[in-house]
Length: 394
Image (cartoon, rainbow, N blue to C red; front, side):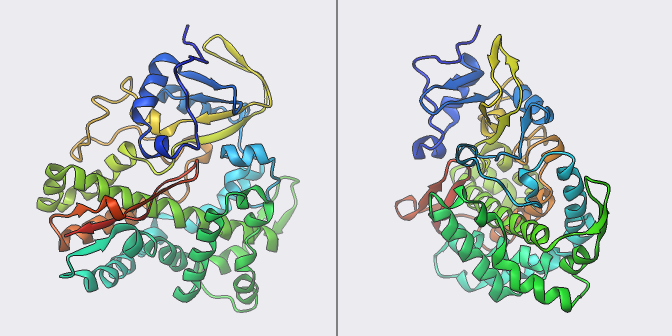
């Protein structure tokens, strides 16, 4: 039987070193302790693909309403209605159905020309300078602007939103307070839209009628809508920027793969799928254990905290052939970066689209680059991993 507390295995989910390169440790956990327990920090972890997938599907046992990071779980925050990521059925099902109106295939596809023009506007002034920054010049700007396009927020307001979430991420205690999820930063815009409707997503959500969990037919309350917009903006701001920065770094480290992409840009979608598998921005998704559950002959008691190691599952050799090889020609397969089941990320198509366009526009201008790691700034908060600065020499 695997040893859940193997004495020579120490997974610290807040370690910067592990956040930067967790893969050797995660392989050992898959082999030696697929059910892992950390007694000092009092959490459990699952690391094999099939286990992580199964836990995502068991929403009666592994619930989201208590939080989806270890920090939030330990803080015992109560989230405002409409914070869809931190909800369970039936409210999650109802709110997710409404929020999905923001991410229809038609709405996402319609953004492509605008996203491509935005990339050109950001990158063209950097051609001929000999260097640019995947994070600061592209990743930190593009996702927030794109979410603004989707919601209808002007560019100058999008920058305020980005700075707000950056400041929140820089404060270790910020996400331990429910008010950061309230969306008050969007209040003036939502109130203005309520009296000045348009054909944008916010106006549609303001007018949408639905049947809530009590059977009442109604429209979204102001607080619910603020929480909706807040969680979409927060998720879109950070995850995609990290994905873009990882793409720049990994392609620099695999010049033969980069050349394949330069020579054949039709590989760009495949490249992003492999990037999501190989170096996912989220290290793990966490859940509160609502009832006793048994794994590997051990009982995990109700009230426990469970970390589902998606970065480990994506490299599980039981599921993926030669998982430590980065190969943009690999046939896309199972990836848990955007979750699985009921909480599969609503914005995943938009994130994929942005990352694909970003790398297509980069390789259209530069066929080679080298990362300046001495001046790069890696960040990891126990949840997302990537760079605030990833300068490259071209």
